[in-house]
Length: 148
Image (cartoon, rainbow, N blue to C red):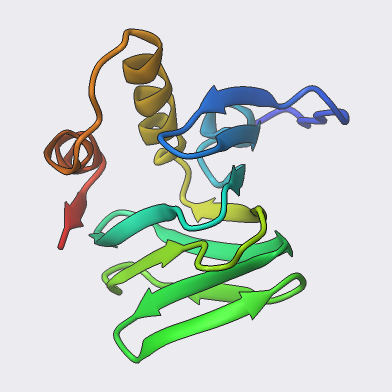
């Protein structure tokens, strides 16, 4: 049985991102693998994630601040604060901040595990490794994710 996990304000795990930063609010270690909750803050004009497909988890997004443009099979759609997108396993998607302001969104990852990708990115950046598209694709591939 998994213990109750309670993470207070300011207690999330901070991680560097290629553009912006992540906060891991809940990881699979805290939820018995059921869910991970990750916040992402990223600057104007940046790509949050190039188009990709997850084969092992669904990803749900909730925009907290600013606007986020989601690139989906149906086309591009921009959502402002309060908007949500649910991407099932196997659905192609990517997202970016095409606006002139910072954006912040929450990722709900089910089941958990993909938060380890964000930790891999953080470790690579801390080690001074270049994170070009090929390197990001190789890191994603560790978590049953194909870059398109």
